[in-house]
Length: 559
Image (cartoon, rainbow, N blue to C red; front, side, top):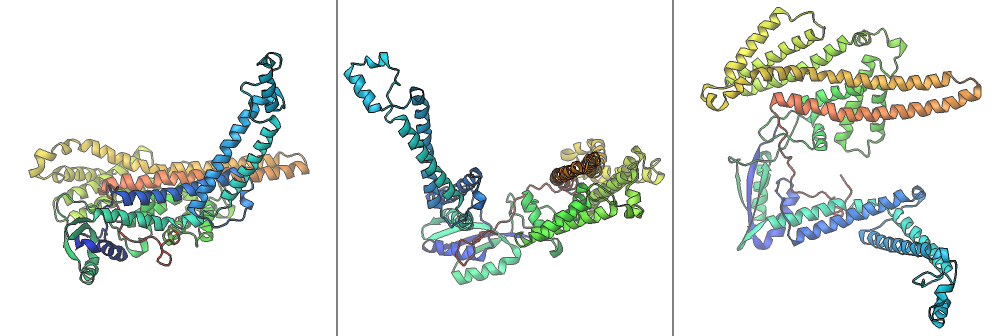
């Protein structure tokens, strides 16, 4: 569900402003709008955060440029130390570049003593330049001295880069949470406006935590006004799915999407259908097993929500591999007679297309039936039932177009006609005809759009099939290379090449499968389904004012 929000106005004495913000942050319940803050305290906090980020970039760049960086023993470091090393590195690099430039200018003239040459030029009144070829101006150092200086600068540069590469960036990364806390606190101080002896700040509070806020107000001596939302106000969105589906919140955060406050919480169907889409788009049980093994191996490093999500998605892919008998692009012979394998392996691909269209129709019809339940007993609920019927009719039409059904059954025509009538009669109320009457004229186009929405689910079959075919082709390349080797030595070399081809080929295919999930699985949920459900994903997520760093050192590890 979408948790109801209360607008909170908090009053505290101006002298105790920081104490009030500390208590508010400790409670960790109020969402504050901290955008637009740009005072001196905020600028200074941003500067500290920027210096930390720059220090991490410097360490990573040094590590990338050093061939033996992986063999170095990492040592604790701090921001100031890293940035001083970076200044030293930049100075050494500049001096080396200057020395190399001077060497390139002087080298054609050979190694000579610049001081002696200057004396001779002076004594001869400059006539020496007419006889001997000398650089103009004369260098300050001889070529051998310049080369020695360049060698020294190279040594210093290598030493500095090695010191940077040996810096443990985790020492700085562990401070990020504390720096973010400091920045948010400075922004809150700026936003908490003082008028005389009273300071005021406003935000949004989840309704279930009202009692906690009132108790804090009595304890801290605040003045608090709690009220519902007024017209024109847009509260943040706090999604609280059923416990079993709560990990999907991490997926929403990762995608950067949030439903509007007035919209529905679609977490349950989103997670269910996304798991199915993930499995079909990856399309290979062996890939799912690799994902599952990697997830289990990284379980201590992954946040719990992501561990659960990846376990579910990987397991669904393994199940799909069992149902379709697809393992690294190959089929296991002893599973070929299984009913699901035979059904999905239909050479005409009609069964796979039927499955995709059925999944699409169920997904979209669910959205419309959900709308009907939410709108009942309003008359527009009948229009939503009508749209559900239109989608069912379009499902029959699509299957007829591609030859899966011989023709649209008679009952389908009745359902379609009745459903169109319901949509036409109840989508717009009589009192709204002047303002929304044009929507009825768009009905034919909207019906065709519904047809296209169902067809779009065929991407589950097309992308999954492409992934399998790519895997099959790499397998064939590897096997043909091995079979074509004429000798034992040739077969040994071919075996090495075969392993390399399989590793690279399937690695590329796995990356492409991951990309297809990000594109197609997300689209089917956030566009096709959401358009029918009425979810625009135009909200902003509830983010309470609270500490991110651990309390043990106020700059604890990342979460």
